[in-house]
Length: 208
Image 1 (tube, one colour):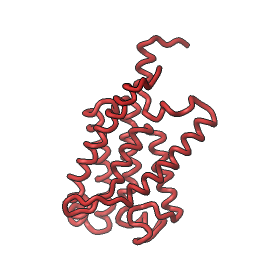
Image 2 (image 1 turned 90 degrees about the vertical axis):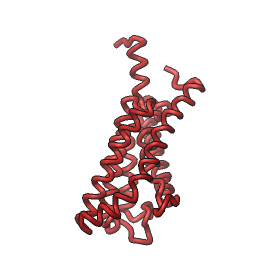
Image 3 (image 1 turned 180 degrees about the vertical axis):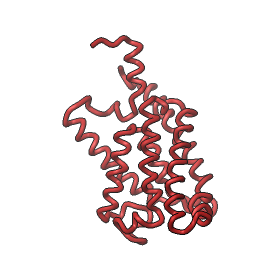
Image 4 (image 1 turned 135 degrees about the vertical axis):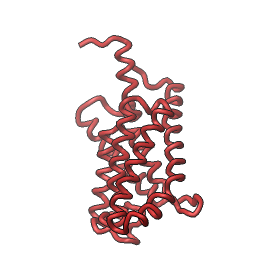
């Protein structure tokens, strides 16, 4: 099967950033993907435990990490990474922001943050989907996709929290304090990914 230069350029442009480092196929590719996902779960854990004071709310860097991981890995590996992270938490590892202080394992995951944990997977899917289509080169397109990802996260988090404490309190405590900080993180992630691609192009990557 032949592929002309224009089609080849489009194929290269549509690949996520991680594709530059991965073997093309076979067990080595699977092994590389596994270790990348495992390393990313460590980054997610660190980001969950890292707090930044922004106004009246202590914010973690976790949603920023999720957006960057998904935009770097693409949809499939991004989703797999978040599922691995949730599996680690379900097994009782203290990988979440409130663990072990507020509980561990499935009991913690069924608590007030349960909807947000599910939203992490949705967020990774949307941001990764955008990266698979080359939107991670364009800050405006990527920002639009990441806003949708953020909305999906908030919707799932709010919905579950509303079941537990009611819609009014869920909106007041589970959505409103996070709107501005999360918009800042979306803007930051949407700028960092195109900047990373520009840097790599300046260094001569990717080579197609």
